[in-house]
Length: 190
Ligand SMILES: [Fe+2]
Image (cartoon, rainbow, N blue to C red):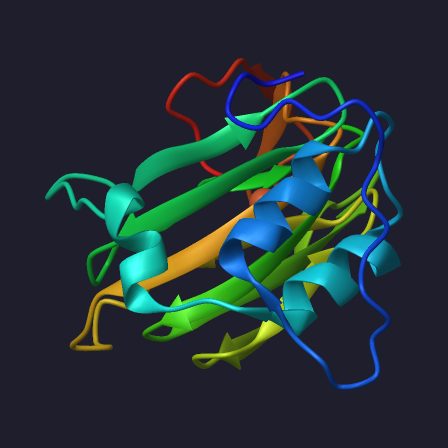
């Protein structure tokens, strides 16, 4: 378990009847999980949370060369990050190598591109979509995608990420290539 909020048993979330949970309650629920929750559960919890700018203040910080990952907590079952992106920052094309994840756009505009892997043709473009503030998007296994803040957005991007199980060794891809590389993140994209 992480040392941030060490609880013995999973906390049952409030019923999703339109009521909301606080950012602290969200962290408590997630950090109390002892096994990786389903994507739908993570989606529900992230959707029902009220997240304010002051809530995220401890995790806000930007770098000029690349996006910056700020870890909220990590335990055996789940991890939570806040990522800060300047315009033009983007991840490599990657998948989560067995983890599933949910992203919530807190501020700014996120662009997500989905790819398909074909054994003969290699990696192929699939679809792209704009995710404005408030969007919650989940990545199934084995989604191959790229996230970023478009260089023409004119604004910073702040996103909240939850992964279950926590990200380990990730796989990265190149368009038109069948090559798959492994990457062990320390300061790695989501
Ligand atoms: Fe990702």
